[in-house]
Length: 294
Image (cartoon, rainbow, N blue to C red; front, top):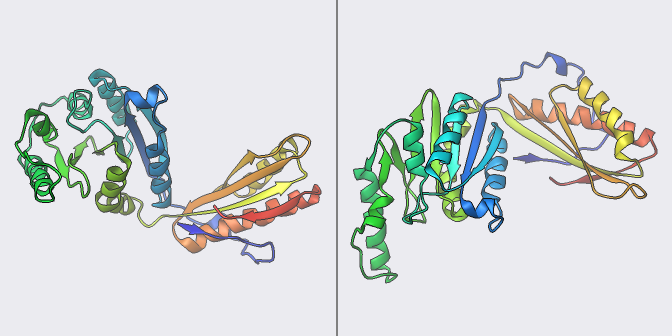
């Protein structure tokens, strides 16, 4: 991801309105797990995935958290498919225990059966053989619970898990690519970077994400609201989000400016132009500016 601190001294072209911006591609994320819904586990997977998706040039339109229930999983996947994102990513529910039900829910959503996939079974078997060779375990029998991790919806394919046992799963349905990832963060990240990121990058068609963060003081957010509207109106491809950090008596606001564009130079130019305008307006209100790293 491109990150930078831009100062107001930079000169800009005044032809940004003529830029031909590419169409955005959308992704939906479905996180499965009762532990997320009862507050036992912080959903760091969603935060990590949305950040990676954004830097790859795509947008996350929705994040849904659902319980370990086949019907609930099936319902949210079906609803997501109807919205036609380019990708649906699920996390969690691929393991050997009774509450790992993501693939059953996926099969129901796709109206298909679920059975042992020979390639997935080979992946699982090789993992346990490797564990035995490393002295981490003795028995390598393919018990029903271990075989469960190789039961995939008909027509889907396994993706290798570099550091864990359960393979990820990919399926195509109604021009939507569905990818089921493990819930263990280290496994999810490893599979994403190795097998999923290249697919998302290809779907983005070279779109680049660019962001800049600054912080202001001495100006209240209510005073800044119309100024943000003004800058965004003149820079329709730049999104500006304000985050209050101080108090009404001692206002401190973080501003995050971002865009996606067909190339890094265009993205940088658009954000930098908006930043210059916002900076001038803040200073005109008597505010002070500090550049931050995103």
